[in-house]
Image (cartoon, rainbow, N blue to C red; front, side):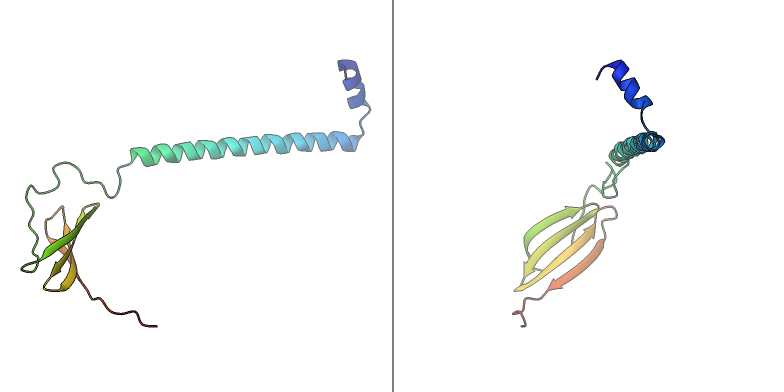
Length: 122
């Protein structure tokens, strides 16, 4: 259609069609605003999380220079894991297994867990 035909089509529209067009324009504008607000919120959240210090980060100088951990005599270390400010050591000593956890900030033991191996019960 050309410009004059389009103007004629709009002029020939009923009041119900004009109301429907106006309502659709409002819906499209509202949805565009919601989309923009959601995008801005997502970007803002990413920036906030990237700039905030993590709960499990250890700052330099906050860990003592030397740490010692008490393990049973003859213990063989199987695995070591660090999570945040905790160090977990999985060990085997005299046929028994255990996990010892130490707090890296204070250097003090946080927990000691004995592991018992049993056959599964059905």
